[in-house]
Image (tube, rainbow, N blue to C red; front, side):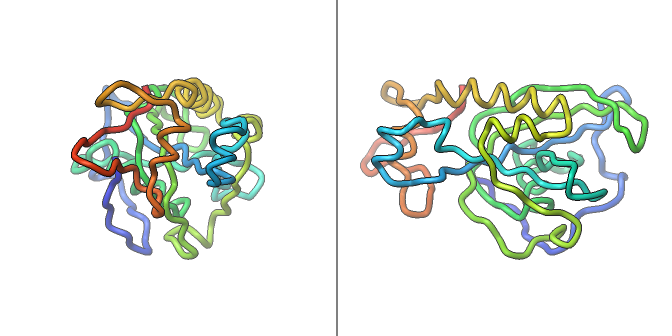
Length: 207
């Protein structure tokens, strides 16, 4: 689904609206991805996974520690809304959150020493902004899926990328029958928004 989020130039701060589950702080984020080549021939005849790039961002502590964008899930937000907001704040990209969460992981924060509950979702990037709230403290890097998995600093995010890869291979379209990711991408309009011309309407998911 395509999320409409408030695009402000400041990141949300504070913990008074933060969600917790049995003492675990809940965080959500996205694995943003795009096509290197949107030519029809590249989508149909090429190796699909080799044609996909994933976006990682640097830690605020320095450019050598890379990760997927993620942050706190607040009480007044739906899951997809929070993931989209955090992805814009940290990475400056907007897009379509596709399908449900890739999984739930418990991990310990190195800086805070507390247990977090993390969720990740895939985002098909449709817009990359030149300015975003955390531009001055983060860098962003587009790379292949394999490189992203290798360079990502967090083991639970590596596992999320593994799940993402598995789902990419078998993406389906809900509606009349099913389709592979190649067909899904071929029916995107010029703005990258999934659509079918005609009376039938479809929803897309990574399943």
